Length: 461
Ligand SMILES: Cc1ncc(COP(=O)(O)O)c(C=O)c1O
Image (tube, rainbow, N blue to C red; front, side):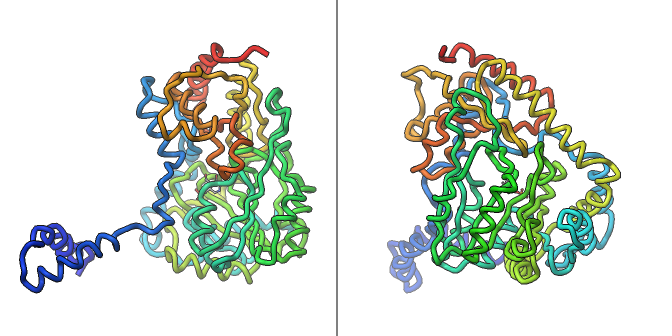
């Protein structure tokens, strides 16, 4: 019997029973008592029923309400163009192969594991074992959920730097982990002048104080979303030393590892000791401009990887077969296609093309060292005092109002980064907005044209 034939009678009963509550047959009496209890049971779990609107639905409702249509969406980090032909062809050809349309091994398809091992071994400076040191996941996100599910017991603490990628939070809370936040701070002068994103810093004293005997993991993200910072080798060394001293597992989210404009160090490669406590996360979605493919992986020592893999097996068994095969071919051919270098060149060109608007307007921004986001500082933008913000925006930090205003007045969507800070620390980024530049050049030009409309709202200093 399939699941819909099991569910259909239940639905019929559920809709029919409320009509019977005034009658007295035993079945009906029983329902009379159980119906309110059933309603109680239908209540969702707290982990999915928070009542604060998330940033994505606020931005989408703002976009729908804007008189300027269509909106230019510079908010969400999806690509506005396709993966290159050699990768698309690989995906199409994989669909024609019988074995590519069936379950893959839970740890990933051997061809992809081998391709990942070949691609990453040079960075590790030794051959990686595809069978024991890599596991394929359904996107980086499910990979990180698997890592938290593998190592976090209720009450264990996980250190997360703010701003954070929002999925970390629920992924840590699901196994009962407690998040301990450590904020990154933009440079004070970032209000007035454009500085490198590398100037956003964590306070190492604060990090040290955040560590307790229950600290089990620390989440690092480099190159960073949304800041665009690439952590320096010295910063990584300090973080690694603390983690070694306190026996903390490092989860290093490196999904933008092919997009760096300054030297990029992978924390796992600092020393064999650091490698032993580090899980490195990658994403084919980010690497190959295919965020919808949902292929990711973790690299780490066998003692850690085996448990991530065990959790992944329980969560979704295995990941999308034909697209794993396509990613394998992508990695096999990337060097001969000069794809990685072109990726950097193309995105760096988009960055400078788009950021020219801030130079033109005199709006400072954090010059990205990696990734495809740029944070612009809107301190100089003055919105009309009596501007009619809706209730759910009024009570959020200024960056939410800026984002709303930009959508309504100019038709450009950006993301308010205080969503990626706790309420207590939201003030740190209240003047910033995040823009994603992974869009076609024409879209970047159109966005720039609309952003010229900011001129009349700029405060003269
Ligand atoms: C920092 C960071 N980590 C992880 C992810 C998720 O990657 P994936 O799409 O492979 O799950 C994203 C996506 O935006 C991200 O920005």
